[in-house]
Image (cartoon, rainbow, N blue to C red; front, top):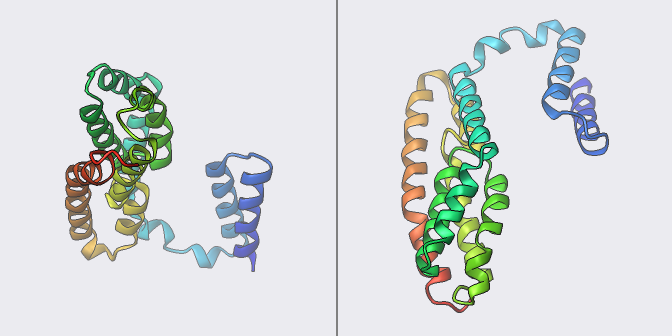
Length: 193
C-alpha cells in the first residue's frame, strides 16, 4: 500500500506541481526504505550499474549536443542541400541515429521544425515526412542505450545481461540503418502523403 501511495504521490507531484521527477522518485524510494528497511535489502546489489552509468553518460552527451546546437546545425546543413527528397532521407537518418541514444519525443520536437523548408517547397508531403520521421525515430528505442532498451537490459538476469545488451545493440543499429530508407521509400518517395 505504501508503494502505491508513493507512486501516486510521484505522479501527482510531477504532473500537477511540476516537481522534479528524479528528485521526487528518490525521495519516495528513501521514504519507502525508511518505512520498511528489510524490503530494500539487496536492491542496490541487483541494480545494473554499468547500464545506469552508460545511459546517464549518453543522455548527458546528447543533452550537451542539443544545448550547443549540434542537432539544429545538422538540420540546417541538410536543409541547405537543395534536394528535398535527399534532405528528407537525411532527416530520417539523423532522427533514427540520434533517437537510438536519446529521447524520441525530444528528437521529433527538434527535427520537425527543421523539416519545414522541405514542406514549404511543396515537393514533400507533410504527413509522409512526419510519419517517416516518427517511425524512423521510434523503432530504434529498443537500443540498450535508449531508455526502454536499457530497462530491458537492466531487468535481464545478470548472467544474460551482456548477451541481451549485445543483441539489442545489433537490433538498434540495424533499425537505424534500414528503417529511414524503408520509410522514405514508403511514405516520402511516392509523394502522395
